Length: 123
Image 1 (cartoon, helix red, strand yellow):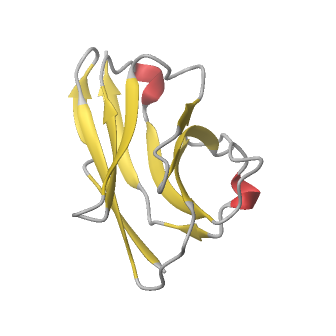
Image 2: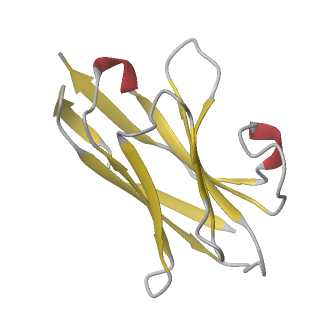
């Protein structure tokens, strides 16, 4: 499975960006697509996840109300719409796939990872 993340960039505080992630290769009957982020010197942290079939979502408290994760079946793509961006959102953002349905905020349950896309929010 290959994951191609895109959409990162430089934006001012309060601005918006939309990240995309398109999986290719092996398919799964049921999976979650998650977004994580990692700033220099910190551990990779959970941002949001979505169940591909049911569309159920879950967010980290730090992004709840500002970020929205969604999927488009026809384009086989998952999006992370980020509004109200803050300087502390600056990180490399990664998309990942998990075929499990537990501990979805933990990196260890995600078996496939994209290469990451840089998001920089200036103050």
